[in-house]
Length: 182
Image (cartoon, rainbow, N blue to C red; front, side):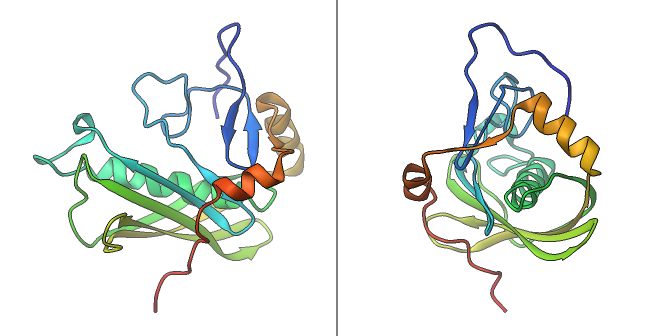
């Protein structure tokens, strides 16, 4: 995370379940004018987001750039770690592209923790066509948990806190995140 300063009057950001200070993250930050501005939903079971990518994120004509798809997968997997009470930095990310990811069409990205080994947290994720449920891309990753003193500093810097309105959070969470089909 970077140490950008929010403009005066900027309110806190909400990822369903959490509030934190505005920031410039390319994936979820509202201060990055060129970013994805993902609307994330996270809890202890995982993270999800739905969006239609605008044409500015395309690679080949009408198809999302693979780096953008990897960014989305990295973000939902990272927030699946945060939803479990810690933060981690990406140590490894492997992606497999099953079908082209179209720009301008609703997609859903999901991430979840598959194994928690003290400091190494293993995750998985996928991007699906929101209308058909077809799997477009999958990923697995390893996140290294930040040390407790760094976690405390990050939480203080970003003023990360649970959203107190649990009923409203549960309402926004949408359907539960399902484990990747066998």
